[in-house]
Image (cartoon, rainbow over all chains, first blue to last red; front, side):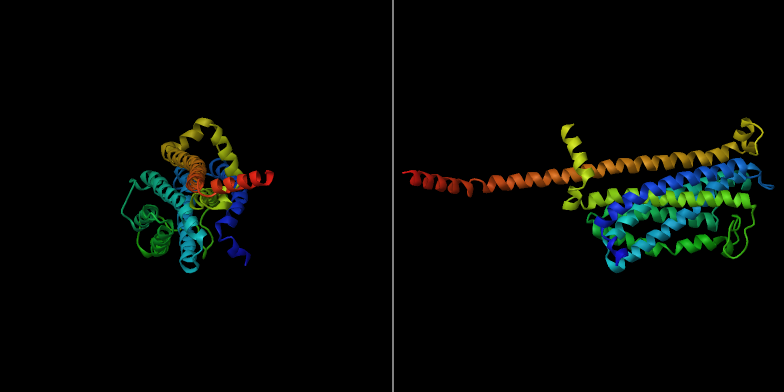
Length: 252
Length: 87
């Protein structure tokens, strides 16, 4: 099957190299459009004034922090079940971006909370579960990189990623399950959005841009991870870019 | 465009610190991530070069150990046959 052929790093490496720049270009274009709509076109919010514009960052980074964790759990299950070599590498490639976005979710949330709630932080269900997500990312990175044998590191990390995935629905439904200071979902799958369509457009553009960014940066990162993991393999040592780099390095 | 002036835009209705603090830190950290991944590619290529160097060193060490045993008698033998043939 074609899909499983790409589970081999040797086949995935060139594919990632072709996809990455396209996704990065699309992400830049969508981010430019999203920022324009969000900061130049969208009207002022009746209740929150201009502070609401943090939503164009806060919601996309929060969504993607959760989506990336789900993607890590997906790759981890594949890795644990099928022993595919790419899975651990993809999980490792996604983790730093997920951690960054989880941090940015907390950061932008704090800067939004201060003017609206009067505090940067409360130990509220939504905020606390997001903090736990950040710790899960950091824990995954620490665990998988602390184990010297890379394949064992992959497996240990995969286990952590799969176990930790229960936190994602907790974050998502926290505003329903508990009485929290955090406002309810801005966009829900079951009801029509409770925000002006131009605001929604800006937010969705930014979310799509960040989605593509995350994919592009993970593919870019996984290529380096593949090179290191397979540095003794002939296919890596015969890559044109490796030979070119070696030639330049030899002169220097 | 909803803004009357640049000053109004930067002020963000008095919430400038919060709005630009969010956007600025996000932009800086994403740029930092791109820079780190770019540096990571360099490190990965270095790692491959080191692996290749290590392998070629092992190879030449192996040559040194085996060198005196195999080619020398073969060379001596061929020299003798050449000498014998010319005689």
